[in-house]
Structures are given as C-alpha cells and as structure tokens.
View 1 (spheres, rainbow, N blue to C red):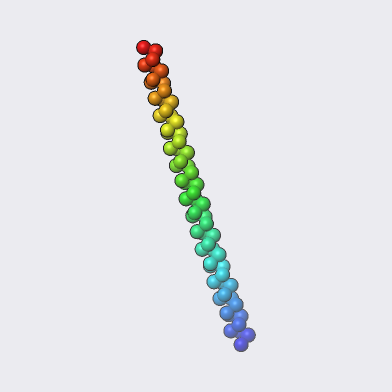
View 2 (cartoon, rainbow, N blue to C red):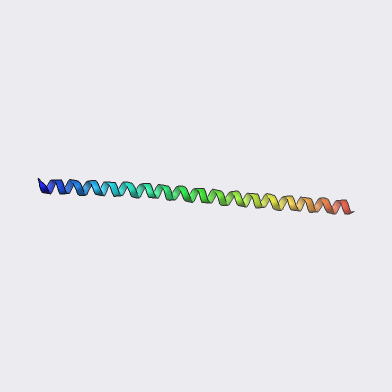
Length: 65
C-alpha cells in the first residue's frame, strides 16, 4: 500500500500546485486589467484638461478682440 499512498500524495500535491498556478494567473490578469483601466482614466483626464485649456485660450482670444 505504500506505493498507492505515495501516488495519491503526489497527485494531491500536483493538484494543489495547479490550483495555485490558476489562482496566481487570475490575480495577474486582474492586476493587468486594473492597470489598463487606470491608464485609460489618466488619458481621458489629460484629454479633458487639454480641451479645457484650448477652450479657455479661445475665450481669452475672443475677449481681446
């Protein structure tokens, strides 16, 4: 029975490692998605800032006329 017990232990350990790898992969994907969303938010904020600056410049030019 020693061989069967060893085989079962190896199978359990392999299953545990596969589970951990899957969990780690899921976390990495989630982290990457969060980073991509944050980058998109920054780009949107920068575009909004640039548009506001342009609008204010145009208003200032109209006032000077």
